[in-house]
Structure formats: structure tokens, C-alpha cells
Length: 166
Ligand SMILES: CC(C)(COP(=O)(O)OP(=O)(O)OC[C@H]1O[C@@H](n2cnc3c(N)ncnc32)[C@H](O)[C@@H]1OP(=O)(O)O)[C@@H](O)C(=O)NCCC(=O)NCCS
Image (tube, rainbow, N blue to C red; front, top):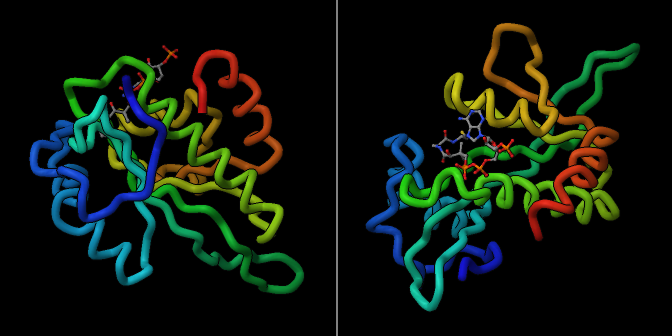
């Protein structure tokens, strides 16, 4: 059975993780824990059965971005910095489940911090198509940055709740 997402710790086994995209596999194996220990990012992982072998993860951070209006001001946004599933487990709903877990965290945080949006920097066209399925939209045009506004977040969570458990 595949476990619930949990915080990455030094006890997780990462050596065998391969999602088919080298940059995302190497990040998990070499940098994710280090980045978490220095409070730059947080990584949630899933394992299968009693094994500590990681088969999927996402890394997030709350960042501040500048918004232009009548007055220039900064707003907090939830950045999904990386999300990946081991090749051997792709196509079985795990990516959707990880994304849903991240979005539930946003809904939870937004009681404490006024987070209005979720952003991702899609790695490539494949990743873009994956996020489009969950209502993320590219902005500015012709970039890899994608946005999900808070109003759409609730809708996306509702639509996915019957299919995937958190
Ligand atoms: C992209 C990725 C996270 C998807 O995870 P997954 O577990 O294979 O996806 P799921 O099985 O949960 O699929 C959920 C839905 O997204 C769709 N989907 C999955 N990958 C897709 C892709 N590359 N393009 C378009 N749609 C995709 C599925 O068809 C499914 O749709 P459905 O519910 O209508 O059937 C995974 O393939 C992966 O890790 N790829 C390599 C790393 C990567 O590109 N990460 C992207 C973030 S930078």
C-alpha cells in the first residue's frame, strides 16, 4: 500500500529514485534534505509498504512576489518547486494525489497566511500539460510559469476529491 505524504527525513531511502527527468531525480537525492535543513524548502515524500524507498515527492515553499497595481505590493504565494513520481509508479494517480495534498496544504495555510495563489514553474511541455489538467494557467504568456488562483483551487479540490484520497 502507498503511504500518505510525509516530511522527508534522513531515514528515507532516495538512491533508487528515478522519475525519468534527471534534474528532478538528482534534486531529491542530493539537495532536498539539505535545502530543508536550511529552511529554504520543504519536501513531502511517499513510500510504498514498509519500505523507506521514496516513490514520489513534491517540494514547496512560500515565496513573496511583487504585484503591480495602483500601489506596488508583495503577496505571498505557495510555490510548488518540484513534483515527481518514480517511472515505475507513473500513470497510477500518484502525481494527482501529491498535487492534491499540496493544494490541501495551501487551503490549510490560508487560514494563517493570506495565500491567494499557487504557482509552479513547469519543467517542460509534459509538465505543463499535467498541470493544465488541474486548471493551472500559464502567465505571463509564453513562459513556463503557471498559476492556480484561490477560487479555482477549491474547485480543483472538489473535482478531484471523489477520485483520489488525500
Ligand atoms: C508528471 C508526473 C508528476 C505525473 O504523475 P503520474 O503519477 O504519472 O500522473 P497521474 O497518474 O496522477 O495522472 C493524473 C492525470 O494527469 C494526466 N497526466 C499525467 N502525466 C501527464 C502528462 N505528462 N501530460 C498530460 N497529462 C498527464 C493523466 O493522464 C491523468 O489524467 P486522468 O485523470 O484524466 O486520467 C510524472 O509523470 C512525473 O514525475 N514525470 C517526470 C517529472 C515531471 O515532469 N514532473 C512535473 C513537474 S516539474
